[in-house]
Image 1 (cartoon, helix red, strand yellow):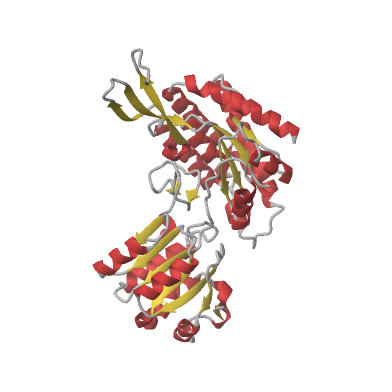
Image 2 (cartoon, helix red, strand yellow):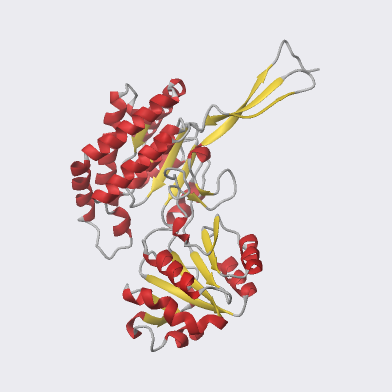
Length: 416
């Protein structure tokens, strides 16, 4: 699409304006944006209502799409948190003088133009802009059609804020919600420096397989919590309930409870809070027997092979029984998406083995996986949660939106 390419060219040009913008002015603009979001709350919520009207309430994406007054206040609050963080660019990461007298400095710099493709979550529009802007980057946003009214309402507020600071609106470009626009973005070599997909595994696979520009994968969250033989039952109950039901549509929500066979007798106690919230459980034969008569029959189902390694994004969960820690580790290694994994245990050696052996972006001991979040990790907000190992891993904050360059100072040096 030629109009998309033309707009991306303008965004590339606009990104150069950020080089001369002092960090304190960036912070001022972000604080102003937060104020403008508060002031425009009624308009943003009205736009969001248009999107919600076209999405069934039982769709797992409905909760991700929903905006209300508390969520808008939280979005504005996150922008203020980002504004308060130190600028991540222009920092001397390393300095040294070579034997020949050349002075070297490794300095942090912006990535340039960051492309983000995302689904359902209009808050991503603001989070991505705030983080990219604080790190000196322009941004190209490709939201889903299901959130287009909401996304455009947020971008309108961002553009109005930029204008009050004499900055070009092209610093943030919201692409049309069309497949062809996604293709154009993924092929924008020389215009977009990196692309970050946020959404379903199908979206992430499509971006990885079709991009001509570098990609950072923010993978789906297939999340496990292992309850060890040494676990404290009260801790386990609270952690399971929080990880599963706090927000079922988020990528750090619990999908599979892995339980040591010696603790099957505790399963009714551990799952009691889930029954109160109508969580449907897909249990293996051992867990199903332990829950039979103690968990509502209508909510207790026999697990199928496909219920493991499945991201439910709803009030559903599978249970797998294991003989020991080694079997738990093997199950997680087979089905994990390398996002967030947890153990509930009191034995220190077991905990250390789990934390060292599990290959995931965030690994927890005696804590809910709900904490895998840029805001919770002190980053203000997040671009996404990377499940890969190159450049960035886990919640991606300001530092993940920078690269570096080498500054070399000489005095007539030549190489012989």
